[in-house]
Length: 314
Ligand SMILES: Nc1ncnc2c1ncn2[C@@H]1O[C@H](COP(=O)(O)OP(=O)(O)OP(=O)(O)O)[C@@H](O)[C@H]1O
Ligand SMILES: [Mg+2]
Image (cartoon, rainbow, N blue to C red; front, side, top):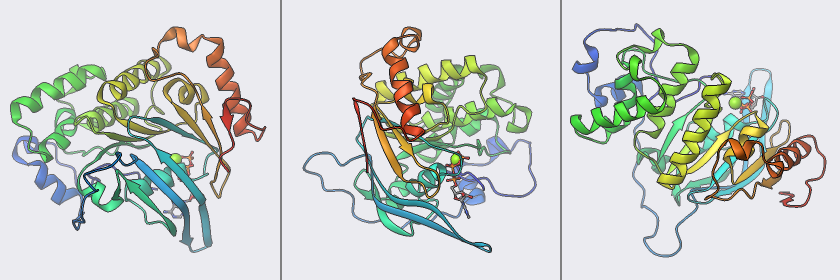
C-alpha cells in the first residue's frame, strides 16, 4: 500500500540537480499529483467551532480479486479542536485506512467524515492539515530543505521567511547538517523526521500522523514525542496519531481510542486525564498514574473491560 503525503511523489526517474531552485512548488504539485478540487461553501461563520474531525457511521470495504476486505465497521469519532487523540489497535485493523479516509485519499463505503465542518475534499483543497504517514513520502528530487519548505511554497510564503522557518524546523528534528541532502542519502528515521518537519511547517490546526515515529531510535523518539506535544500545545493543533506503542499513546494523548481486529471498530476510549497543561516530561513517564493508564489501555486492547476513568465507546 502506498502511503501518501500532501503531494504524493510520482514514479519515474529521479533527478538530483539544480532542480530545487529551478522548479517551483506548483511545478512539483503538477509533477507529483493531479488533485483538482471543487470548492464547496465553507462552514457557517457563527456558532461553536466545528470539531476538527467528525466521523459518523463510517464503514470501509475494499474490493479485491480475492473478494471484499472489510476494513472498518461503524466507526464514530469526534476530535475537538486542540485535542490529541491516539488510535491504537492490532496490525490490519484499519488505522491507516481511517487516516487515509480523513485525508481524502480513500472514499468511504458508507458514512461520512467532516474536517472542521467541511467535506474532506474541501479540507484537503484548503490544506487544513499536515500529514506525516508511515512512509515518509518525500519528493526525491528535492533536498531536505526543499521538502520541508514545500507547504510554505504552496502557500506563497516569502523566500526569506521560508529559509528561516526551514532552519528552525530542521534544527528541531536534528537535521541541520543534512538540509542540502536528498532523501535517498538519509536513513529511514531521518526521512521520517523530514516528513514530520514538513507536516509542521505551516503550523496546521490539524495533524494527521500515522506511526510517524516508527523508524526512530528510542532516544530520538522520546525527544520527538516531547517536541510534538509542545508544538501541538503551543499551536493549538488537534492531532490524530496512530501508534503501536501504548506508552507513547498515553504520554501524548488526551484520549486513546482502542480498535478491534478487522473489521476495525472502536471498542474503547481511555481518557488519560493528563491535562493539556501538564508537562510531558521524564517525570510523567515515571509517574504511577501514567503506568495505571498504560495498563488500562493494554487491558482495553486485550478485551478486558475498561476500568474506572475510561468508558466503553460502543
Ligand atoms: N487499497 C487496499 N486494497 C485492499 N485492501 C486494503 C487496501 N488498503 C488496506 N487494505 C486492507 O485493509 C485492512 C486495514 O489496513 P490498514 O493499512 O488500514 O491497517 P492498519 O491498522 O494501519 O495496520 P498496521 O498497524 O499494520 O499499519 C488490511 O486488511 C489491509 O489489507
Ligand atoms: Mg497502518
